[in-house]
Length: 433
Image (tube, rainbow, N blue to C red; front, side, top):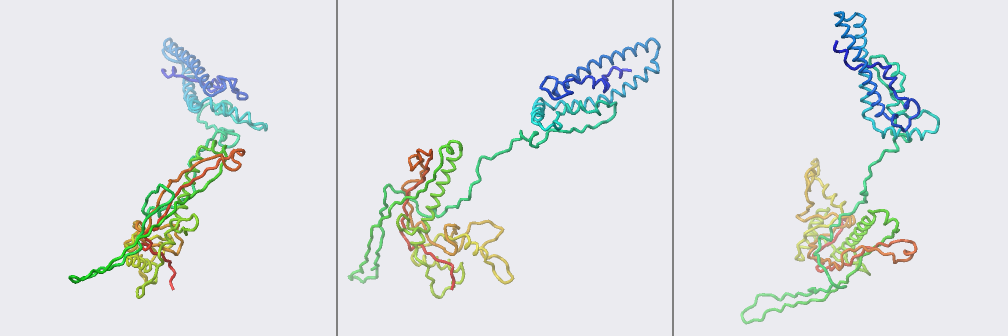
């Protein structure tokens, strides 16, 4: 009989405890949100628990007076316990659904309801959907599932307006060429607008074996003064003051792009500058042309590059690198033994290694045109001078900038390139007769 003192409530009592404020349109009142509704239901449960407790005490008193509880009281108690079990299950489900909600859900549902001007069904909160469901009102026990209609979704006009998307601030930049040629040369600096150096141009060897008392042969030497003028590499772009002020990354992006373009033009000049006007005299124009020696193989890329090494060696220099276009180096790496043997001659595709041919380093660069090559001892062949490192400056004092609120951003640097030992290089192509 102790079970009679456990909390019990009928679903009719639960429906009766439902606040009136949630029966109509959603109102921004204390009783209209799920949290307040839950508190109201719990208060009603406490009241009914007191009534059930009183019923249990009456049953106990009856048992004391008569010695037992009447069959009618037992039947009522059994029915009450059965109803209590089913009803408490529903109450627990309601609590689980209501406890997770907060007043923000109600705010969202109010905004959606106010925005629905077409006269159709307006979205309800989860609490409204539960307490207004006719199946809940008429429920008498057992198991019940509730389908919630007009739910808040990610669609536009519903919850979609509150969905925020991730945004990456780092822009996807265009590719930048690996600029590797300058690093092959001897670096130096200059403090004026010209580089003056002396170059030996004469060596007559009169050395020989001499008898006692006989004169030795004369040797002659000569030098000349060479001058390379410092030249400027520059570019600019224009942007509005508003763009510079509103886009916090714009200045750094422009700075990086302009510096890259200056370095890119610098490499083009080092490789192929023709020396005319403000152009540097580059490696290719200064290097002696390849001349194939007689009697040696010269039928493919590999043969010709080995003969280029030979030409440099015969000038008493030692080649250290090849400068090739990536397409030509790929053609060399794809060479196979031939016949039925598909093994590659140069390298293993499954092993990563530094490109090397004939013991010399291979530098792949898009600054070289396909079909041309350059071999040499580049630190011996040329010196690259910096007069000023790259600087990026901004000004409004250009053309119509002041009245148009525009800013000119300019990048510049001053450099010089001296080819001191042209014979330490050789240039050629891959055209075979």
